[in-house]
Length: 220
Image (cartoon, rainbow, N blue to C red; front, side):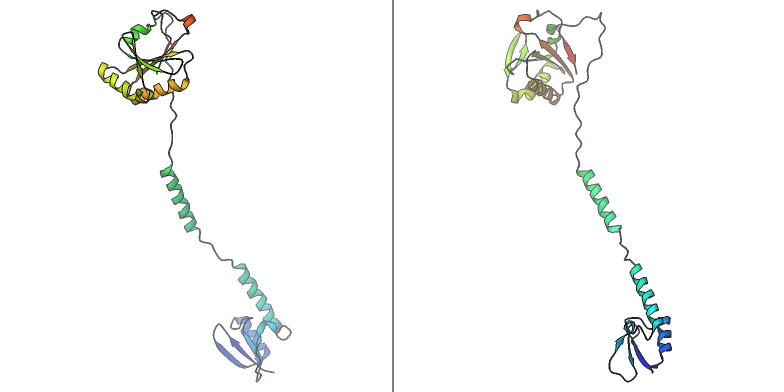
């Protein structure tokens, strides 16, 4: 019996082939398992891999070919993913904002024998802002107090610094003054470019020291 064969890959029609010739074409790669064969003179075509009993060599070749196709996994191009990663990294680096926390440096330890100046002595050449226990602010000058609106504190300090030609601020706070007001005065001093800021704590009415008493001060 002879056979006809048709190759889809090469578009070639083979006629009058013996079984061993069909097997030889399959082994050479000219015929694949998906190609068609038929008995010579027949009108019905069959897939080559369906004729298992007639062409065992072709079937073996077909299994090897299918295994080769399964083992060839499509490669994934990682270049676009790497580019996108670097673009996102650059974006976040440019848009990120870093906040530096403010810190108040403590003054160096004084010599125990050194004399500590009083508030009045310090106030002669400095701006004095008093913080009362109820949170009100006042500007002290020559023993007189002038109330200050918290919203205008920074402008007032800047004006006084230019008028007096000084960069020193003394914060005279009551012992029970709110920390919120103290922080507000410190921020206003920074806005007014006052570089030397000192903090004094006033005792309550029962234990208030005399005006000539040394000031308990801390410098910034």
